Image (cartoon, rainbow, N blue to C red):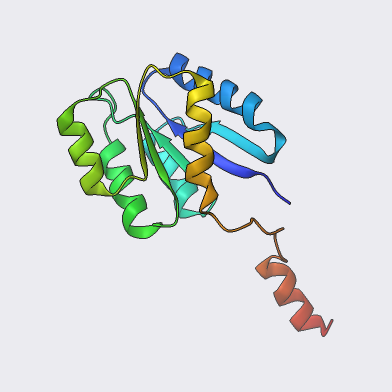
Length: 146
């Protein structure tokens, strides 16, 4: 079974790396945790159906996170979105609730306290199936009658 994919979008590279390495250690090999270089890169992965959980920090220093959350909620609503932010305000909480995020956590948070939030967000996902044949393989078998 292929590993679950978790993408992190954070304007603070150190915080993103700590979250990524900590979750990777706690969750193990059934998960691949990737720090997306930008909200656009995260959206491309989401649009390509390669993301099982999106963790975002909608900081005022990283544009595009709100648009990313809006796009995911609109076009890939099955992807859970977890907000993990150091910029916690009542206004941000309300905005994220209006956008339909699944979980909201304020930093700082111990990774052992974050783990149940992450596993809870992933619990609603159906089991990941092994990838089937590619369209090229199916087309070739139809042409060659195999």
